[in-house]
Image 1 (cartoon, rainbow, N blue to C red):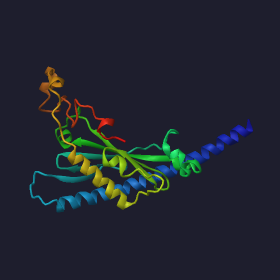
Image 2: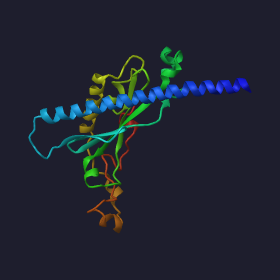
Image 3: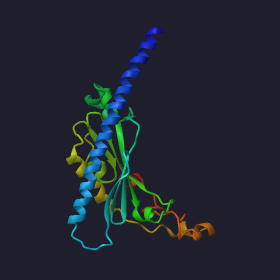
Image 4: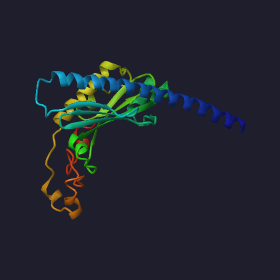
Length: 227
């Protein structure tokens, strides 16, 4: 009984401290990421080469765990999850000595990146949907990888050797913005919109319930490049 209790005490101490280390490192990383986001938006706004006032750019800090970037008709929401996760045992990373010999390196914080239409926020269309285009994993040693769409899914997958410094953040942000701008709004299939309720059509002038998103009515998943 005493041995089991001592083991319990040790595990609580070790894992609690480890998860706090990962959490606080991710929090610091996210603060730096917000700084890079603000710099990126300022640079794009100053140098994109257009003078059309209808094309808007802005960065908004939404607190410790969220930030928004508006680029023309799109909004990217960066959201830091407050929990700490461990890579699944089926992940190929467990074949590396980096995880096999140092299990603590398998615990990560996650920063999710969602793409929304800017009009969804402007017109308070609460039924509109956003899409997870990337998620950034970072451990207590600042090693990172990105799971995401297209280039976001294969440019940043060297978790063992890559560290998340400001240069890496700039590169990830640029890739996310490139993907977002190239990820166009498609008209949904006709058959998906054949019926509408009175309540839905009457609410169009305020907060419409007719959900809009870049791929509403289409499949958005593994077949479109998620790795």
